[in-house]
Image 1 (tube, one colour):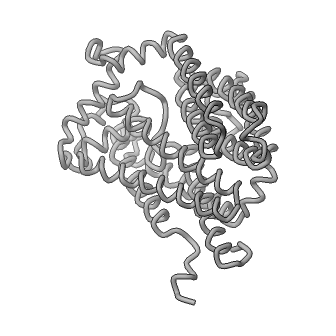
Image 2 (cartoon, rainbow, N blue to C red):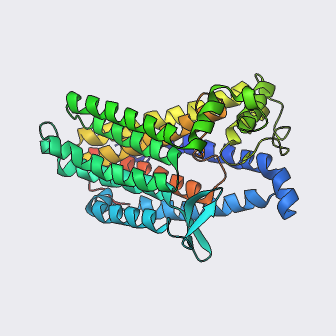
Image 3 (cartoon, rainbow, N blue to C red):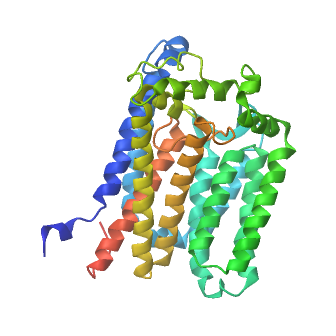
Length: 379
């Protein structure tokens, strides 16, 4: 047996994730140094916290790497219950922390949990389990197709109450892709796309602040000092970046011109400092993760390990969709939404959950390799 046979993890996927994490630490440090100095008198305040979150994320990732995917399948319904309870609790004043007009953080003493990030993961686990339990009836039974959509509608409704329209879009898009990859009937899928599109459009124009964001996205320069301010500053950052950027640390927009420079709009600072070359590097890394994730899922599908396959599909689509939306928002191609850039943006909940997602993909790949050798998967 060759030496390569003993490799039980995906080197390409691991390298791509590690590169994004390192770029993220570098950009968090660069984009937050001024705001950290002003408000905390410590230029590396956010970098230190991000590293602490990363360490915690690695610890949880190690635990996930040692957990068989069948464990997640057995507890998928319970995890859905945890998801629903957390989404309800965050709406309760005193438990849910109000930040910028939204209740997205569940305050548990000295620990804060962004429930939308947790919800994305738990919904994908539940849908993966549901597709396995009802796969034999998916092609013909309309009721079996509607049931997960009812669950999705409830979760989307709770997220919109926070409100968190961005997380809702990501979850709905991911579940739709998972249903597509599961092989549902085209007529059902087509009707679902029409219904979801109409509902999302109605929701988008039903709230004044969403209408303001949509209007600003279409023509940010019309009101560049109010509704279009954040987007115009991001576009200026892209324009200044050029082909190879202004140089690491030399961003002007992070000097209190661009709000949320180290979180939702970190990609704009990256574009300014690293230029088009840096943009293409990040896009290539996300595309690489997406490709490897789908490949891992397909390998599991070929081994008749359907839960692992659907889980890999869902996790890969989630990371890729969220990255595309964030980059699209930063570049002025999509309306502004409060979504972090996976593995890059500052944020404890986001980074920790991203580490868990990476570990799940690596665990599925590990099991694929052991099953291919005819061995029981374990570490």
